[in-house]
Image (cartoon, rainbow, N blue to C red):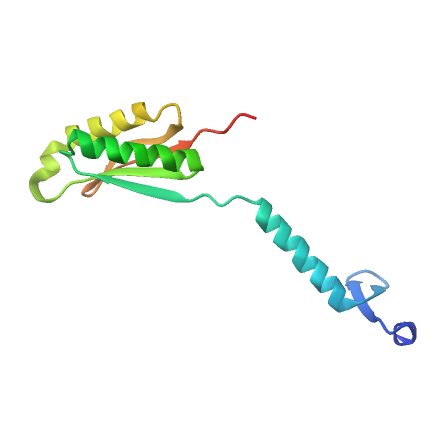
Length: 138
C-alpha cells in the first residue's frame, strides 16, 4: 500500500482466493476503461440475428405473393432469418392445404438464398415455417 501511495497508483487485488492474495499496482480508471473498450469490440464483432416476419393469407393472389417473395429474398440476403406464416381467419382454416402449398412454394422459390429450418407447422390459427439464410462463401 505504501508503494502504491509513493507511485500515486492504485493497488488492485487480482486473485483474492490465492495464498497470499495477488495484487498489482496500476491505474484502476485506465484498467476499467480498457476493459470496457475490449468488451465493446467483442460485442461489435458478434452478429445479431434478427427474425423478419412475412404474413400470407390462405388465398394470397399472385401479385401479392411475388411482392412478399421479393421482400423475403431481400431479408435473407441481409442475413436475417425469415418467419413466414399463413394466418387463417374464421372459417378459412378449411384451406390448410392451400396454406401449406403456399409456404412450400415460397421455400422452393427461396432455395438459393436460404434453407428451410422448420417445415410448415399448424399452431392454432397460424401455419408457420422458418427459413435461415445460407452462409456466404468467401
